[in-house]
Image (cartoon, rainbow over all chains, first blue to last red; front, side, top):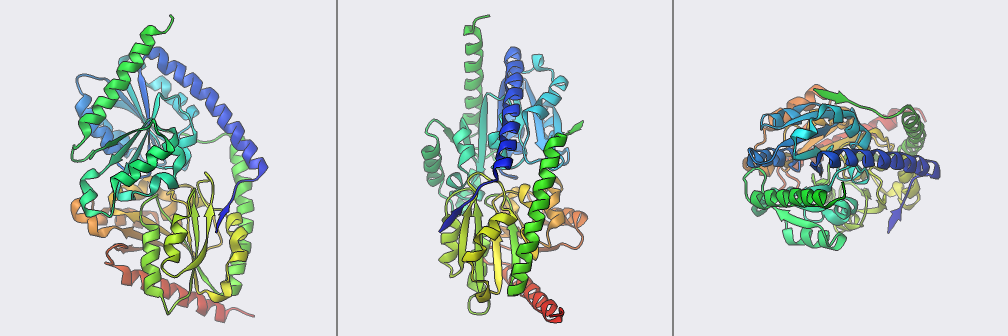
Length: 234
Length: 234
């Protein structure tokens, strides 16, 4: 049998208060990003699913056509911001010092360091965690969940919240599938059950397979964002 | 530059209170496990690092010599308890329903369902998360951290707390290392910097390589626990 469990009422109330404060600040961030006309994507996955490698490949492919800024979230170290800077992106590293997700307040805190008027797309790489970041709105346009083939095809149903919240699921490390007991169709089917409007892309950020479709997905979202902005009343 | 960030004071106070209440219940769990003379291991890793596969292989190898119970922690589904039961273990599934870690209270809650007098070892498979479970003592004898090669060799320094807390680090999926940009020596060196008394084992839970050393590690800990119990004053 399976035991269902939950927090105490006091804990739940504190969590609610934190989340509603977070929602308020996320709305402010969203307004700021909206004024600047940038598309903001919040990348979420387990540690080591390939978020930074996906960003590196994305930066190389967008170079010269789309201006990118990156907000890097990590518990510790500035390794990831160094990696994306080496691929030409500006940006800033946030270290949570133990915190398991980025919050809207953390993103607001680094906003003054980002020259949004000189950017088209802002990527926020969240802390490596498939659970906690899913409930914290940062003011993004869309959440992007990464799931690598090496993590197994049974994960969507075991971590349902993030798949429910995401606009696109990127199945990464597809180049390794021949060495694994992994069925991409099973993972995709589960994602579809959780969120039928979630796009699903298969790719290898390291080897390049499927990256064109990912870049097309970003450019389409950027176009939609700009079109909506032009149509909006001044 | 890297921005360091933290919670508000109110949030910190609530966290402290939750942790001290957790510590109290963990001590009760530890006393309970101690009376029964069982060795308790708390398995922690990212989603998909191979905790359940490691348990399956472990159960097959311990069968007939060591009696095992499993407490399975997951956000959702009872897939993992079904898998370990198919390999002969008794046990119970805890679903956190969104919660990002097991707590001592959750473990205490399922204790009446476990016949500890008929067990030698209890494995607790924590929720897949490399961050939050590291701060919650469950009453275990030792934390076991799994890190799979596919997650990259740069992870220990990026997620330092769990490596600091663990008695052994299992580097899993060593069979895939030839297809990856991965240096096991780098990961091991970082673990050593964070916690010089942490044992490190390389293995493939799926293919079997290195499993003998893991089984020896468990049996050694079980012997130490029994010896300490015999020496303790009645």
